[in-house]
Amino acid sequence: MTRGQWGCAVASVAGPATGVLGSVLLAAAWRACDVGVNGAANGLALIFYGAVLVGVAAVWWGLRVGYVGRWNLAVALACGAVGTTVMIWIFVALLQVPHGYRC
Image 1 (cartoon, rainbow, N blue to C red):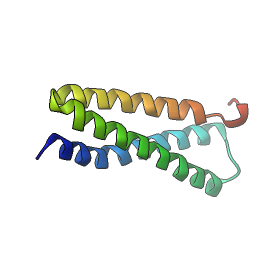
Image 2: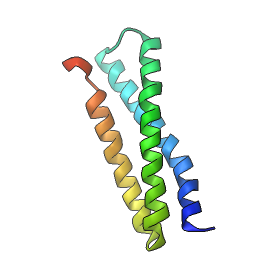
Image 3: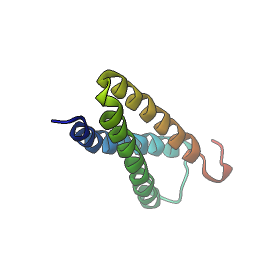
Image 4: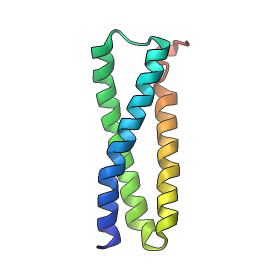
């Protein structure tokens, strides 16, 4: 199996996992701050936000493992994990308090 194929395999697992984790953390933040109209509206927003995060994370992981992994797989996995952590942090930080509402 080539590194490019490994990149696709890892991206297809890590992308959705990142999206789910980001959506769960954002939902918990919204629930704690009582943000939103109701559960259905929040759920639909989380689906759309999570889909964007899945796409970005899948591309990130695919490029890291497929390209950087050619030289050093451990560095590629570490870069993927650090990048995923930063993506989730930015995702939750930007969307945690829409319209300036502070809890």
